[in-house]
Image 1 (tube, rainbow, N blue to C red):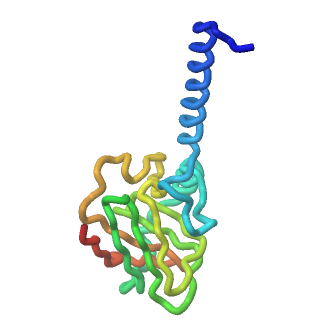
Image 2: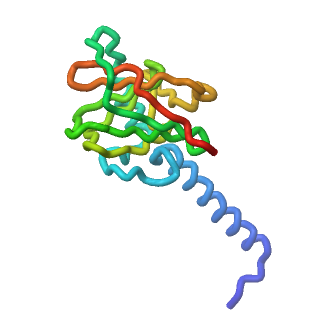
Length: 162
């Protein structure tokens, strides 16, 4: 038996659309930053988790500083990502990556001779604002690393040719 009632069919379509919209909104509120899951399982967190972690950290301006950092980055404004590479022969643990001394991302392990792809919206400030939420990202940001009680300032970076 087929339903021929147009009113019933219209209500069903509206209900299905409402469910899809609500599901999309709910998923977007707690979803992972970026279009795809991060290749590092330790960085597969929700935006809420990244923001909560950033709220617990502060820029260690008084820490001893070092240069060079033995790291390099590539900033891609089209994909809104930073590729950060550990150029040393040792793994680093408990690394804080700071953009403009304000937005931070904690990386549990940066493997030696390996680059990590980091979405702009993984970086949060202490108030829960993510890097791209504060307006257009600076075309010449500063990137600093904090690890092992030292602040490594001015990570060199390049911009890709598009």
